Image 1: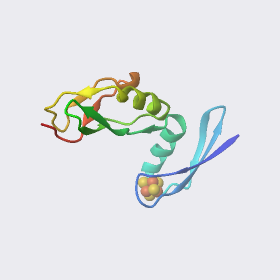
Image 2 (image 1 turned 60 degrees about the vertical axis):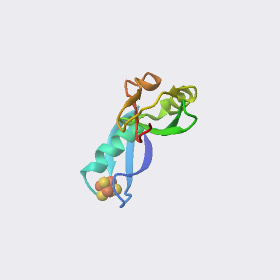
Image 3 (image 1 turned 120 degrees about the vertical axis):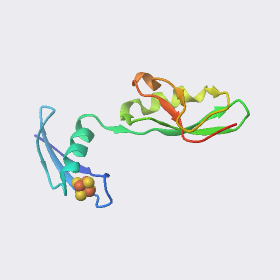
Image 4 (image 1 turned 135 degrees about the vertical axis):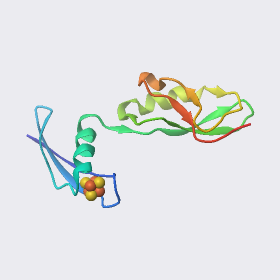
Length: 117
Ligand code: SF4
């Protein structure tokens, strides 16, 4: 049996949740302060994901802040960062515009979180 301690980041309480696994399957989740912690701990153990926030170059020489529309698998973060390196975006850009579709083959888009004229 394997044990993992997961710090829940869903709210500031930061519960230290104990997850026990056997053969890659979760057999128990304990010490969560509320039900949201159960989902967080399950996802963190079986499919950890993060929102990628970064910037893309603009053709004007400036940069535009971007993020993935949804969290992407943690293991894809590096590949996604590498993909963004050589992208140059042509303004105008509005908040929410999709600037890269299907980043790193995750099926999730990279969207602008700023405006550029
Ligand atoms: S388990 Fe619930 S109470 Fe505890 S940190 Fe997560 S969201 Fe907050």
